[in-house]
Amino acid sequence: MEYNDIYDANRQLTGRLHRRGTPWKAGEYGLIVCVWVYDGNGKILLTRRAPEKSFAGTWENSGGAAQYGESSLQAITRELYEETGIRADPKEFELLDSRRDRDAFLDFYCLKNNTPLEKIVLQKGETVDAKWATFEEIHTMIEKRQICRVISRQFLHQEQQLLERQNPELQC
Image 1 (cartoon, rainbow, N blue to C red):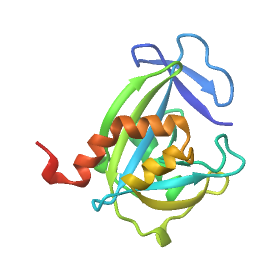
Image 2: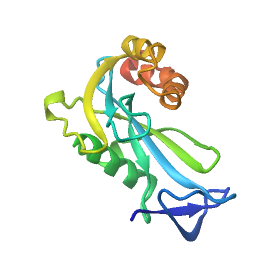
Image 3: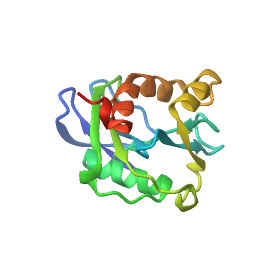
């Protein structure tokens, strides 16, 4: 059984716990983390969701819910390792954006890392494939609905920030 911390609308811990898989009550928020791993050469790492997951077979970036007692950085470090086998120091992650939705705070990170595909370790029941995709390939995948809507919107919203990190000469 997995538990998550419950935050209030101001992102303050309440001291209460939420059992994963149960509905959130009004005014309760969890913490979700996501990371765009980029290689510095124009590609983003995507993983494919397992058939037993929601949005089965679609491609996404790594991420998930923070567990009880985890900070945002601890959660993204764990999630990335669990889903890909990539070990990264929490200091290597750069926060791109943070927002609140209906029942969660969402923290979006990026990480420069060029782990070869043959070194990616997929998490059984979570991920079934991985690939490095160019920005153009990601746009094509979005058009073909191979990336779920939520992840597609996130990518399009953060694309410029990711492009700037891929090409440091574009930064002001």
